[in-house]
Every structure is written in structure tokens, then in C-alpha cells.
Amino acid sequence: MNDSGSIGANNGGGFPKPAYSYSCLIALALKNSRTGCLPVSEIYRFMCEHFPYFRTAPAGWKNSVRHNLSLNKCFEKVEKIGATNPNGTVGSTTTNRCLWTLSPAKATKMDEEVLKWSRKDPSAIKRAMAYPGMEFL
Image 1 (cartoon, rainbow, N blue to C red):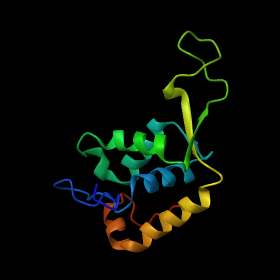
Image 2: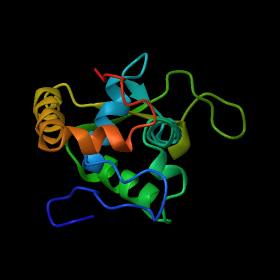
Image 3: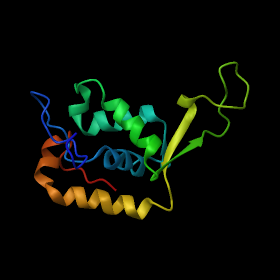
Image 4: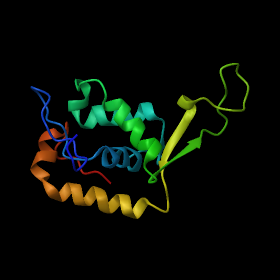
């Protein structure tokens, strides 16, 4: 990651890192989900599917995603309704049973952030995408 928070180098072959910050990539995953809420594993899956760099990226990128989810006020953790704990009873959930969503109060700010990054270098973003013609919400 460079000083501005972007992730913009190449992994040595294949796809380059997307020219988006981790918070923008997370926001894209959440906004393009059916419900607007995802477990962290589905955020990883979105990033790997749409930005193939992450399929072979050096270890550590998942920690960066979790760090952003935990510390960035644009994201909120919500419990899955009806989630069960390991002994099968409904009640307190474990971390992997939680969903993440965009904070309604910060959604506009995040939309502006994604747009800002999208305008910086659109051709670099297209090169990093598995489906360059795809438009995100």
C-alpha cells in the first residue's frame, strides 16, 4: 500500500493490483451484494472474482480488509438474524457469523470516495478487472 492508501503495483505477472483503496473495494463488494450485507469471506470472494490480483496476492491482504472493516467508520458489523452458535442454539454469534454493511450515515461519503478513485486512473482499474466491461453500482 502506498502513502495515499491505494494498492497499485503488480504481483509479478497476471493482473495488477486494482487502483482502489481497500475501503473502496469493500464498499464495492457490499454495494453489489443482494442485501448490502456480507460476511468477510464473501467480501474476499468478491475481490478475488472481480480483481484477480487477489487470487495470488502475497499474504496480508485479508488482514488489511479486516483492519479496514474494524476501524473505518463507514462499515458496521451486524449479527445475522437467526444465526446459531457452535452448539446449535440461537444466541450469541461468532465473528464468522457476522455480516458487514455500509453505515447509512457514511454511505454518501463512501460513494464519493469510490468515484474519486474511479476517476484517478480508469484504464488502470479496467486492466485490474476480470470483467473490464462490468459497471459496479
